[in-house]
Length: 392
Image 1 (tube, one colour):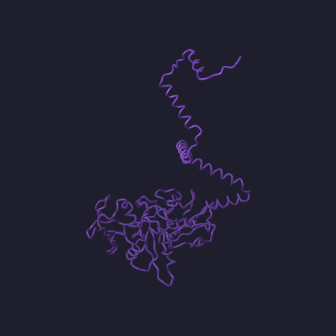
Image 2: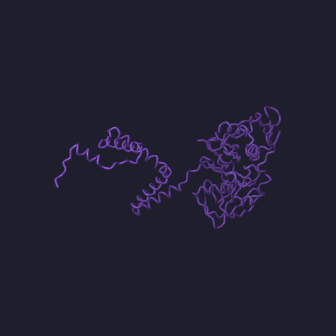
Image 3: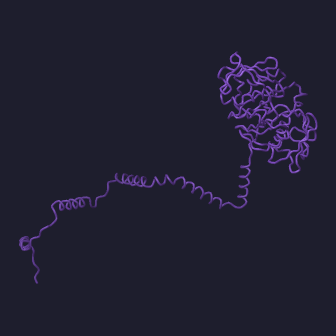
């Protein structure tokens, strides 16, 4: 068959002979489809302009940041910690046995390293004699940083009236240097009349928190070694002082009773030996004798006081004279000459015995000839001063 030769006229005639075709789509639908195809053809084959690539990358980064960062922030600490653990584990596997053992020894030494303690022990009166310059001593009561303890601090001085020595040290000593706070006596004018101490305070100068310790602090300052027996109060020259807790008080009788002694560590490296009387308790509440006092010196106390005697250490007490006593250690315990804790224990026992009016104390069965400044093969006598502070 010969192929049909198409021309415009033939095409027109052919189309007219076809049956009519009707599109069922709406005009709006057809318009939208045509518009979409037109936009596609216009953009087909065109490259994105150069400036749009960074903008697109930035937009993508922002999307990723918004989606993932909250979880990353939440788990970041764990991821960093896990990373450190993995790195440490990886490093530890790479070390040989010798270096591991060395590191463990170094680490153990670092953990067991003890900060040197500025320990303020008592003195013997004999140590004040025989020098080129005459020496004396004085004790002043201060407060710990929580106002829970009245802490006596002693100073080596030149010979003088006791009250003059107190006033001198109140002006000279900075309690902060030893981890303590100021004494209420620093705000007072202090004089004396015969055996009576006169303390004159400005009105309102005693804080309420200081009042429970005030009587004990004053007694530790003026009544130690039986210096003074009474204190009178004045307010700017007028008789009596009006306390928040006690009301108007004109005078107090002073007494420092026998009491067990314990260790107190200040916020600094300073360490003190402090009696149970320093907690503000009454004299009548202290143990009746030295034997009973030693029995409680291995027990935990409140207000930061720590025992210096090992738990259940049974010391035998034998009174050998009106002012002399022997204290025997059990066979199960031996002192160590280079152990500061053991020296502090001896000092605590000496101060406790001294507070019960024993001025000659002999230690038996210690296993040592000497410890610190003491010869243990003979009685230790005339312990005086508490927590002696030596100026630098």
